[in-house]
Length: 125
Image 1 (cartoon, helix red, strand yellow):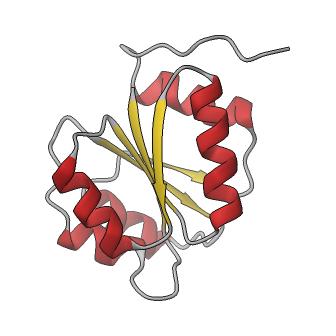
Image 2 (cartoon, rainbow, N blue to C red):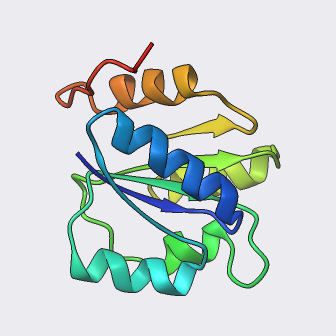
């Protein structure tokens, strides 16, 4: 599965990329919403893991600017839980959210839930 990670925390994006690749997925990451817009024009993604709170353009800005195919799922990742933000993200097309911090098990469980037709390789013990 092709996954795009958009998070301004570069170390988190790198860690998520490693987890996803270790479980058989292809993952790209970026720390800016403007770069993510270009990336989704260049390549199809099955899933976008999207941070809400970023310094220049936030997740709502990204969702309102992006032309995301209906087949692409968007999963919000945030430590900033506010009902209006979550409702706005859902109205813009997000299908779910994970509260930071989350672990590998929760990430993979969400992938299985939101993309049940895709499987991942078992995590290394």
